Structures are given as structure tokens and as C-alpha cells.
Length: 359
Image 1 (cartoon, helix red, strand yellow):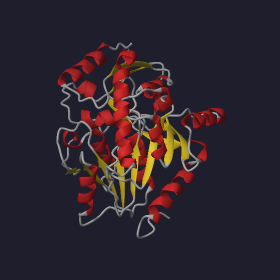
Image 2 (cartoon, one colour; image 1 turned 45 degrees about the horizontal axis):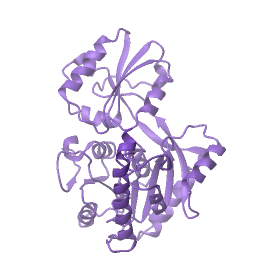
Image 3 (spheres, helix red, strand yellow; image 1 turned 90 degrees about the vertical axis):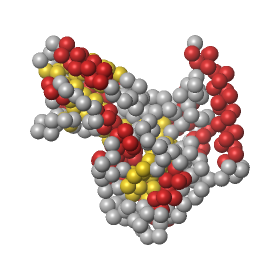
Image 4 (cartoon, rainbow, N blue to C red; image 1 turned 180 degrees about the vertical axis):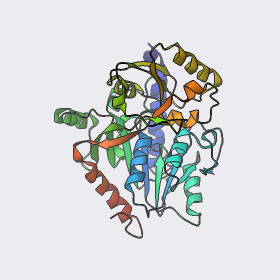
């Protein structure tokens, strides 16, 4: 019913987005180019396609001698304008995903700004200019002319099966996919068949000039959030005797729930909206749920993104605090295609740099 009621609004939104894109295509609205390799990572579906894991993959893939800057708008941060991440930055100041990136990769530059053009111009004025700029969630930010665009598509939510906002979850029409150089299908099952791969390519109408890759999720160890003296846990250590109180504030937690349930344990899920800011009442709810669990083997698990915000929340219940873990994840390329992907990125970066940056 909601979709039917909102469909006329979606048609208006679609018309506005199509018209805006045409203005850029006709060069009435100008896109700014820059003298360094600029790689855009984005989507056309709201939330949960795996942009941050892809940014992390690119950071790990690029060589140590390459100076990398990540530019993000810092979604839902409590500040405005241009900010550089530092050791003193808080998640409130720069946002959860930029904070996560800087915490994991302190050697890179992380900048937040609603205006990506201004952010890039300020980065290029710095004494140590970046060799490569990664644009996080900027597929619709067409005022920056990215040299290379990666479009991420959730295997479980193909754009062709969705509708425009607000009736559906699309930021723009599926035809916007044509602007991408690489299309990455994320969250695929590890045993995806060639028949399924062919069907998805056909449905997405991949262009001859575009490369398409299929990726899955690789989960790491359950890492203690506060008690650094506590050992990390393998997922396989969870079993039928374990109860997991799962706390999430991400767009698509279903894959995570299923992964934990595969271990045979009981999952109690406290689900919040994407980029949720945790309040005192939220923490009290977690503690109440935890103490109500009768199983002697029980832990609290959250995502890495949620962990970034929980680090700044006062948790007075030491029992609960010492039982809180977060589960990091990485993107993994299926069918041994990671080298093909790396070669495409290498070619673009080297062809658009003064010196060869990737060997």
C-alpha cells in the first residue's frame, strides 16, 4: 500500500533526477576534473551495498608508498564543512564510516565535506598532495568528474526490481548504471552458479565497455570492543549453547544474522535504523535484554560501524561491557577474479599519474 500511495511522488522524483542528469550530460551543469586519479565508489540503491568494505579493499590494494585520501560527506555527523580526521577526532565530528576508516588506516588522509569539490581542492593545496583520491558514496555527486567509477549492486536487491524513492529505495533510475566503469555485485553467495551470474548480467544489461565482478563477504574474528585483555573469538567457537544478543544500526543486517545463526546459536536481534546514534536508553535496553538471557554462554555482538559509535557511549554495566564484541568484515572476489579487478585499477591509476604507482 505504501508503495502505491507514494508512487506518484516517485515519478516526480524520477523526473527531477533524470532532468538533473541530462543537464550534466549536456554540460549545462559543469563537472570539475582534477589532475590526480579520482575513483568514485557508490550505488544507486539507498544504503547497505558494501561501500565501506570496498573502500577498505582499495586502500589495502594500493601500495604503501601511494598517498591516499578518502573524501566522504560524513553522513549524519554533527558538524558541517571541511574537516580532516586526526587522532583527536570523534565519531560525532566526522561520522561513523570515516572514523572507522581512519581508525583502521591512520596512515591515509580522511576528509569530510558536503561539498566534494571544495574538499578535493583543499586536499590538493596541502603540502603533501594525495596521489589517489577515493570518493565514498559519490555516484550521484556529479559536480566531481571522477576518472573511474565503481557502482556497487546488492545481489539481493537488484535496481531493476526496485522503485525510485520514496516508494522504493532507488536514488536514481537503473539507467544511471551506464556511467559506471566497473559494476560490482556484492553480498553474493559463495556458491553462486554460472547460470545465476549470466542471468544477473543480462538483467543489469551490462555494456560491452563495462567490467562486472561478483563478490561475497568474508567475516573476521569477533573482536572485544572494550576489554582489550580478552581474546578475539572465531565465529566457529559459537555453538548451540551460545546466545548472541545482536545489536545493529545498519541498512541490511540479514546476511549478518544468517552468518551467526549458521553457527547453531540463538540470536536475539536489537535492530536500529542505518547510522543509528546510540542513546542512554538504547544501552539500558541492551543491558536489560542481556541479563534476561538465561543461557550461561552469552555475548553481545555488533557491527564494526556500530562499534565506532558505541566506543563513545557511557556503558556503566561492566558485565555487559566486558561481553561486547564487534564483527569486522571484508569484501572477497569470487571465482579468482581479484587480479583482474586489481589490473583495471592499476591501469587507470598509472595512466593518470605522473609516475607508476602500482607495480
